[in-house]
Length: 221
Ligand SMILES: Nc1nc2c(c(=O)[nH]1)N[C@@H](CN(C=O)c1ccc(C(=O)N[C@@H](CCC(=O)O)C(=O)O)cc1)CN2
Ligand SMILES: NCC(=O)N[C@@H]1O[C@H](COP(=O)([O-])[O-])[C@@H](O)[C@H]1O
Image 1: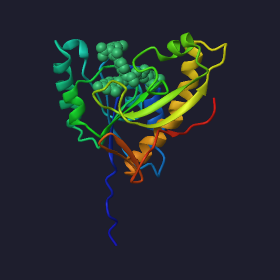
Image 2 (image 1 turned 90 degrees about the vertical axis):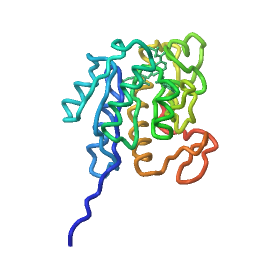
Image 3 (image 1 turned 90 degrees about the horizontal axis):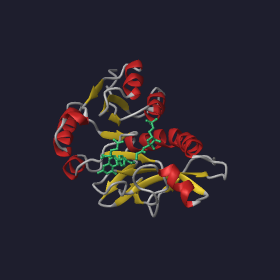
Image 4 (image 1 turned 45 degrees about the vertical axis):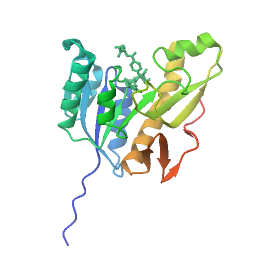
């Protein structure tokens, strides 16, 4: 009998920095039953260590340096052209630090996810860990959401919480949050590749049913 060749969903990861979330996805994708393949890693910063991580894993990389473009629109057009060459089924933002234009987001509607270091809708934007400390919050965490033109405002799929201790600094909080990120993102990407997570308008569907709110996952930290 001839075995049918199975083509796994194509994952393209965008990063800007260290790439520890990329590394967690690379390691998850090595598992025999992982239902996706990382086909490329793109960065907007030529020196991003995420590029080195991808290269060491034998994954194709590309760089579109945002400083080389006169406008956000021109950068986004070049980035989208580079992405589409790989025909991805999902674009995963993993520490990708550029705000994307509405046209770019529309081109990938329902196919682009982001991981954000806060319990959205609180603390969109940057410097979330310090803002949590400054506000005296005792609970923090990470959110994974569909990307829309509304910065960090897209429908939230899953979250994981971390406790904030009085002794915490932005650095120690970042470590706590990243430990949860590295658990949560591979799980959510697995589910997306299995077709269990979909975007229906502004609603997140899980196994075909609308989520009433983000799935709370992850271990206490
Ligand atoms: N249209 C959207 N674009 C992006 C989203 C999104 O939800 N909608 N998520 C972000 C990721 N992100 C937080 O999770 C984020 C990244 C970058 C910034 C930001 O202010 N970037 C500055 C440059 C900062 C730098 O280079 O260090 C900018 O683009 O001018 C805010 C939030 C990814 N894009
Ligand atoms: N607003 C976007 C943002 O702040 N994203 C955050 O950048 C870090 C990237 O780390 P990594 O490069 O080691 O994966 C992650 O903690 C991610 O949540």
